[in-house]
Image (cartoon, rainbow over all chains, first blue to last red; front, side):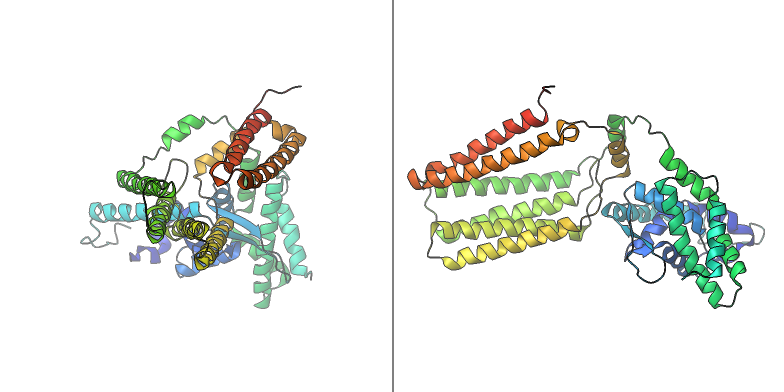
Length: 129
Length: 302
């Protein structure tokens, strides 16, 4: 794991830019195992990275709408009797395929960047940040 | 239960949505945000944060609510552009994998050979033992057709994503089971003393139908996004959408037609035997097709 993420000061703009391009795939991954509602998805993403990366919740809700429109997830309102109703999201077969493709693409990109940026040998110097 | 923190929240949310067009989509977003905010505020007040402060903080944590609301309003309100479906399809073209084509052709050849063998056996040209015929039905028809179904559903096409392996296999299993059951029922049809084969066949068919119903009912979208965009833009007018009475009439005609066909089948079976009674169904299919062509696609009388 690259430790540049743990120090958000200088690397954060680039780091979050790279990550933002994968918001769709990140949300789909969170939904792979079970249906979840918005706040739960938001928490799951924060928890998975130990708080290193947080997508703004409002951005997330716009993402959900795009995913629903593209047929990658389905949305339904829960039937909670206690407290407020929650809107749940469920991944579709199309969403699963999209997520699998995103994982393959990322592996390929990772392999290429590892070679090109020579991250295996080059140390992360203070000046580079 | 309405707390002061909640009323602060509703006010702040209304402020964030001020000036945003009220559409079903933006209302839906607002409700979704509200339910999330209420949960967060409850969390904060439980930690001892004052009501007004909790509402303020929950909204701030959310990020740019206004931007999200505007984006939602625009996506929905956006004028639908004319979509060139052919260009989209070409841009998303997926060629079938050669290995898949080979597999399908090979399996289809097996099915064709098995079907020929069975026809020869049924017509008495080729004398085949009952057990052998059932085996041909199971291994030559049910198994390869099931495999073809599972294999094809697992393929990516121009308009569809591949179905997950497990689900595709279940579809294949369901089709295979129904055909396998049909093999046993057919055996029973020829040898009515083999009651067990009839019962087994019916049970397997019912299980297959149940499985097919289950996978069908739990099926989710697997179309690619571009097909959704194309479908939303595609205005297909047919006579039934414009004239529901016509559709109802078609349904009633169909019901009457098939009732008549079944009656004719039974009557012909008793009078001239099974060798010719199936013609009743053939005629019914032809009438149904002509009826569909005339009633759904035919010239409008008005």
